[in-house]
Amino acid sequence: MAVRAGREFLAIPGPTNMPDAVLQAMHRPALDIYSKEMFELTDSLLRDLSRLFATKGKSYIYIANGHGAWEAVISNVLSRGDKVLVLESGRFAVGWGNAAAAMGADVEVLKGDWRRAVRPAEVEARLREDKEHKIKAIMVVQIDTASGAVNDIEAIGKAIKAADHPALYMVDTVASLGCMPFQMDAWGIDVAMSGSQKGLMTPPGLSFVAMNDRAREVHKTAGMRTPYWDWTERDGSEHYSKYAGTAPVHLLFALRQAIDMLFQEKLENAFLRHHLLGEAVRRAVGVWAEGQVLGFNITEASERSDTVTTVVMSNGHDPVALQTYCKEKCGVVLGTGIGELRGQAFRIAHMGHVNAPMILGTLGVIEVGLQALNIPHGKGGTEAAINWLGESVHA
Ligand SMILES: *Cc1c(COP(=O)(O)O)cnc(C)c1O
Image 1 (spheres, rainbow, N blue to C red):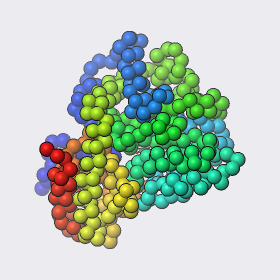
Image 2: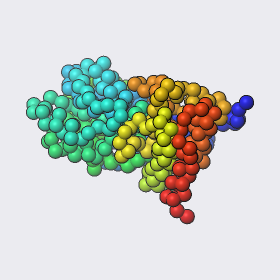
Image 3: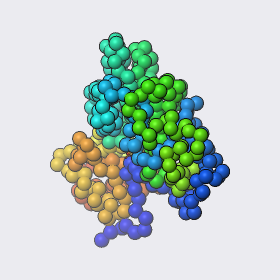
Image 4: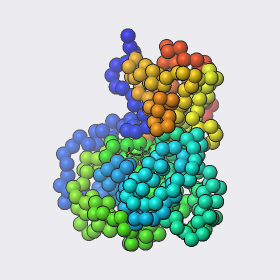
């Protein structure tokens, strides 16, 4: 017995649900990679990526996932032995730091924990201790997709300024670009990176890096540079060098369509949509939590992100059983708990191409699963989400 048929709905934090128009944009022959149309496509995307990052600096497109862009950033600005400070708020900044360590950097993790965001005051205190300015770069994520925390990137930027520390400020926006405000130049960020398959509604396989003049200066003497990632190589006059080889033509068609859709909606509207739908999810989880089994992973309400909600389960209840029910019986795929939260949490993604029916449908299906599996929960979670949207989305 099941009530699933047709399209399965992915409520996982990447790859995310893609608009039909993005899928259709790829359904055409490749371009001659030496044609004017190809050059124009690349130029338009590089310009618009810098607009998404809100920087006057340059952007680069890599044929790689987010892990590739991490490596691109590291190799372009670091030398072996350079000290890097990683700001922990879950899994991903630490993962970026691990890559840097494997490449020869001296990585220090500013201990955080999986249930809260980075504290800017702790960053400032650590930087003030570094009187000799041994720390060359700071790594942090805007949203940690494992814990569900959102970091205050602007406030951390101010903390770095307050400590008067010259380290490069480097931010991972894989789970946030296009979904919430990000102001690379205004917030004092030197290098930012992102990926195609989350908020940007595009297939996995592309990632992006933007950098400013300060990063460019450091790049000149960076010792970890390799040909594929190297910014200087990619600045070469030939279009071919912009991708260090053949352009990923179809992924670029998809990305062009996705960014066009975002700009058509207007970024502020997309951010507000994410906030409204994210809050709808939080309203539902807040009610379910009354049953003493489910709860928010992130303890401070203000540190819960607008793109993914990590829900912990306790008292011997298994999130995997709920995930299996939602998928097999109702066709909704929830995100699994990862890292420290494996087997203890599930995740509801609300990033990218999401709207009210998708989110209310997902919440409704979770509630069906909670009931079918006899998992204690407060009644009326989906109704609370409906009430929130009814109050907030005005006629
Ligand atoms: C998904 C994700 C990554 C890793 O991206 P991949 O494309 O899976 O390599 C890095 N950082 C954050 C914040 C992410 O959400």
